[in-house]
Length: 399
Image 1 (tube, rainbow, N blue to C red):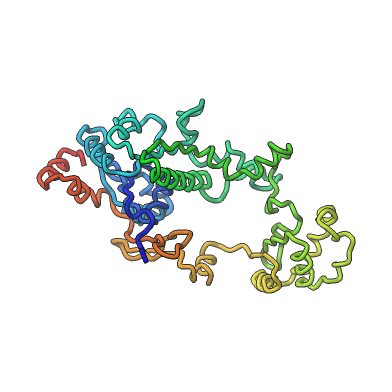
Image 2 (spheres, rainbow, N blue to C red):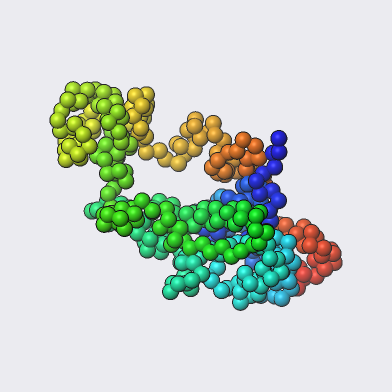
């Protein structure tokens, strides 16, 4: 059985920074790609974080480590012709280039798609930007919050009384990053039967709207306009929502008649099975306020975790609202081995590994996120640069 990782023969030149791009190349690095991270002197700005001064001072902020393990670091001053020459040599042998500058930035430096693909027709060049390489917003600066606002995501999130709200994580960045990883994988597969590389154009706005395809279709097909609906599920069913439960909250995802009946039985309200107010989803929705009062009244004096266990045992989908520390210690997460212990110069840390497993050749974290330029000399040696020349490049500030 071949246990080689899926992309173990793929080399990626990674010009990305911040989050969308690094998240993308990290997904491919988890699956075995040799990702060479191109950094400026001092390293990527995301190595620093106001959240953790200790790790930032080490040049290894937690956010940086989260998406840059398994990568090698090459520090170059891209304003110097000799640095561009190094990139050209790397690109001639690489499979993929990934960048998330504004469109045209790397072209002006002599490292755009046309320049690099002329050296390597099999090269796949993935450009991630806020709005893509074409269109009236082509050159507009973009960050996660802007795309969350523009895409309509914020118009769907939060309570009507409180107004639009951002998602609790960098949803636009990681959405675009995952889309870019899939796009690169698609282009690599296509190259197996065309033999040709190509330009891959990833837009953060397009990616987010793709993930919002359900509410988009409800508007374009039926004219339905979504607004903030709090914690209720997209199904709009009154039993798929957040409910007060004793000292805390519980989220129910009761979407079928069978689940509804089991919920009433588990709540000790089997007497309501014959109540005409709750005969079907139309009447249940009509009497949603009364139904909420009944559900919350039944759980009024209990512990949310106890109710979660009781309802789950009755096959009623539900969960209390876990904190991150709680879910990371959950037996299911521990069993799946999602957190991978990774070495650093300052001791081991735990990072999130691949979100899926394969029967053979599964991905994983094999090497820690490194300091800026940790692999510069090795990479140059692989290109054939003698030690004396490498020393000169250091002295002149090229690397």
